[in-house]
Image (cartoon, rainbow over all chains, first blue to last red; front, side, top):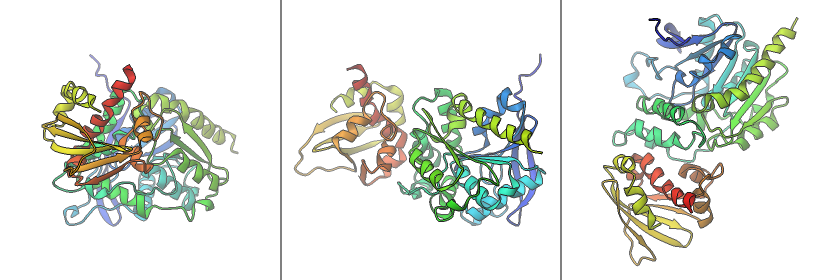
Length: 287
Length: 121
């Protein structure tokens, strides 16, 4: 009997990040234009399982997704027990560029969701020459905090249970049950303080409102896709950012929430595939 | 709101989710307030105000229109979850939030249980 393996292959990558040795978990599937995928705060690369199992994508794209340090199967750095985890814009960009270098990716497409969508805007602004296109999912220039994130990390509240409670409503109400609860399960598995540490970037350090208008989309196309039911990064937040970025191409995705690629992969692909076709056509048209 | 008792207690999985919850919380629907007593995840009592000296652990306060939109069978975006209401500043959550936050999935589903009533109306 032939085992029913998915096309996804996962490996551990050894590299130095932020001056320390790291062991990073990286998954990939498909062949062609590299498509580097960035997961949301407090979750991991499994969010992209739908893309990495779709033959329409794998035919033309080499989809790569890694777990950020502290997330999923990537370890925190040595000595982690002596410090709080806190994600900053500077570190997040450094990690992404180090992974691009370590894997020798030639001008990949970068696609990130939520914190990954926010850092996509940072990449579009400061490192556009490294990417052939950038796709921000649930991306805005800033999010006002609307709850006290200290609840996410205290010993008398179960971290997995509360993370699930926080994100449950961010999954679109029409999502298939299996994908909804898979998405929530990833959150339930996050380590203590990791979701909170990511939200430091999302709500404080990653604020890019004062610079977002400087993004030059003639150097690197920028697509922004946001779910109708996302109340963290709302459609209004994305459209507001898009109005300030000349040439950016926003789409509001009906019926979807904050985790489109994970909560309802098929519905999300109906929005993503035409964009990937356009990016592929750009390359084909290039001299 | 009185239907909450029957709706929650009939949902064995929801009661299980709240098995460590023992509290009294206040729900304010516009001008009307309710005290909801929970024992081990089961709704023990739903009492309608006004109250002279109500004692509660935490309170969920929102205008009537916000709750009514939240309780629609298919609520529009921004009204489909308690935290969506918080984000749009329609819902205020006050008091000792520990039981609420440490049982967030439970309390979200308890308040959403009233949607069923609307759906079958």
